[in-house]
Length: 262
Ligand code: SF4
Picture 1 (cartoon, rainbow, N blue to C red):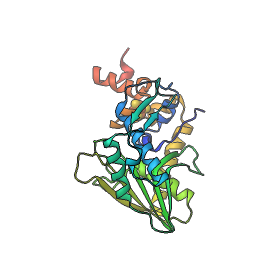
Picture 2: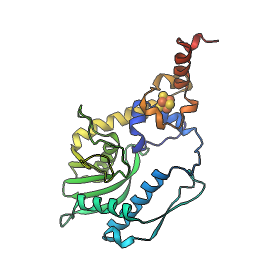
Picture 3: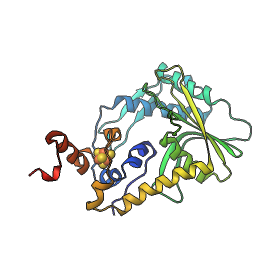
Picture 4: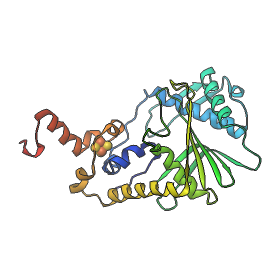
């Protein structure tokens, strides 16, 4: 069976299209060196981690160099000097999460893996545990707005994925505040938040299990049945080998059933 990972960042895609889990796992990683906004985001996250772990304001690291390198996806390291924009972003985050209350535990870049579904794993930017309540905050460095909750009430699945792992890891936690902090977002409301309790999060975990089950049981014959096209295809690494997209393109170009095209 092909191994896959249930990465929180891709959750909107693999929940909508479980086939992408199987298909993406078979695609060789492509090395690129032009994703500057993503590298800058990673460097800013690293600066934030340094601030939280060393309990310092970001200006303490002005002029230092941060290297971003993922040997699977980059040919060359990206080296960034800590500048004013990065300092402002990290400090904004620190100010928004505030001083932790006495007795609470703070984690930065907390790596987690779900005990029941080990494929569900990821790293949360900031988690503060205070008794039976937690604050889980995610730094978004870009300008495009990422919502915590849609108008219909549905909560961002990336955050729900992290929340599932927090509930799993910290048995005493019953409620979590989920926040997206977006210092450079093109909006006045740069901090957006909502809440979730353990019971409601279990409903989400059932959706994750269902997607994983479909991927586990997939065969070549069923892959295009469980594939589902949509805006989530944009970041799918399996776009070029996806049978559903191939069929949809033929349908678009020839206006009919791909099976009838000889
Ligand atoms: S390209 Fe779209 S339909 Fe195909 S596997 Fe990826 S997400 Fe699914």
